[in-house]
Image (cartoon, rainbow, N blue to C red; front, side):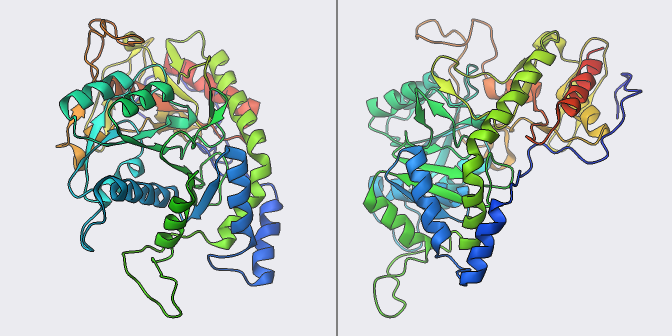
Length: 430
């Protein structure tokens, strides 16, 4: 550690406290055993059928297609959108065929990479401060610059719904389709409606660290039977209805295993319990850190209920110590009364706990650094609900990345463990 702060007397945890690890209950093993005993060990079986039915019912959509990962769901959603917008491509081309797509900037790259898979060009839209999601004002500006764009990919960061009504209104105004990446927000609602139902195409994830898990897996959600059938076909190597293996278009090995589906089936009854536990963690952090120059990741308290997947912290600008980061490491000067994400993360790691930096915005990633990036700009006076005051940072995502971090949010964390994390953070500002 480079910190000069005093962490003496704080005993490291004997067992590592993870950011957000799977929380298992026992029912998962029962359904995995059922898959084993009935010999349905591949990509068909009762577990898959049941979770597709149950999740569609829970979310409030007509059809759900179980896939190997949330990324697979996003890829096939992108492929569907490209085919609808631009028609069937040649076998060696993606469906986007060089067309531009507006994408959330501060997110995991799985939201964005499917655009590249389908030969599209991602254009990144800056973040707003109210929910840390795509800014509707920046999106409107993007359409002014690129009026030909017909596809938008939004995400709900850390389980917090974005400004869905405003984003949808901008898309509808410009005749654009919307892909909703709800990978992190399963169980979260906006105006009483589940995320994963607002887009023309929707995806959720059951990755190992998500609110419920299958160790892996994802799901495509839709009200369109034709789209659901197409995704099922594509996800099983696009096999045609013939007595032999007949293929007339490119397919993928994306279907979920019945064994993985068994884990998810066992997890589903505990979704609301997990959300309640995550919310309690968020509230304890908020209360325990209220006397420090920090804020928690925000959400629209009037319209949305997050699933509180990860609790995040943002350091006030005037409380940041001197710090600099390159592509692989960060350096800082420890200062009295100030701190930075790196100092806090190092301090948390020193007691055998795991935190993470905020998602590094896509426009800052080396692979996408040459792609266009659209901000709302710094006056915000002409638009309603403008979040930026004059003189405020123009690049909101980069600012949150610089000053923010994800705190240990494992729902197996005890109150005593969380109190220790809170004490460590206090000492970082001593």
